[in-house]
Length: 196
Length: 99
Image (cartoon, rainbow over all chains, first blue to last red; front, side):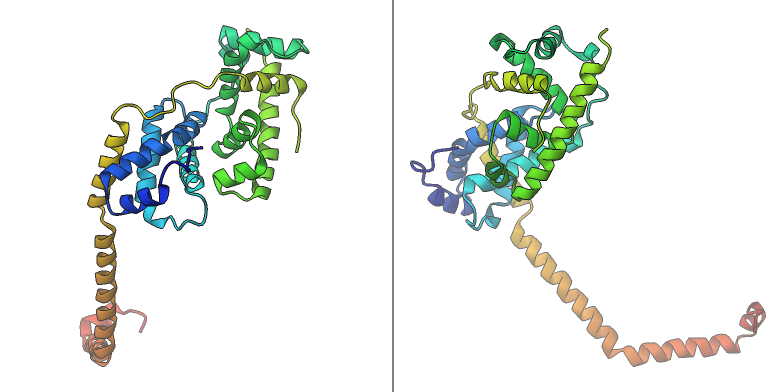
């Protein structure tokens, strides 16, 4: 999260509302780490992270008059970022069936290791594991993908996910339950598919 | 909440250990470009102009309703006259085969 202590957010927002372009630039620089982290976590295929971040910031500026200070500004921006990512993910077609044959060599190795070896996957294989998990997540609906990303990869709590997305905690739990079940099913389909 | 197969859990644990990629600060010129585009967009679709347009549309609707209300009798009598003319018309009688 950006450091709100050293940044005069309220003053900056006032100036942005008065169309001060320098204040708008400062606000973008201040919020960029937060926005780019969310964009990278939920980046659709064939979309550049910079384009997605720009889209999020433009939406933020369009709606800035609607911000009434009921929630921290970073939470409000996070929700815009999350909904923008979901919109982009909905716009892209989900991947068709996913099989062993679609895996790269390193992904196949890491999957094999996860199935056959009861110890943890080797640290060197972490990147391949992440790529493989991302491929599995691409086959889920955007909302399901998002909740798995936050819960199982970023290890956020239900309360944190609720604050980031604006979904109430019960909804987060229900979505997490369904999303995990779907991911489990996809994973089983992948591991049971023929290796060719 | 439901739990995964142990092998999927191992895969997710490995994925979590993957280093987070990339610098998080804004690339050079990004914030200037975004700020400029934000205000450019704001000028194109000024909310005050949109509000004014909505008010004008509302007033126009009100005028239309008042105009119909004031001229209601005239409109209904005109419709009645038209139906009287139609009933006197021999062609209308021929075409209206049911009566």
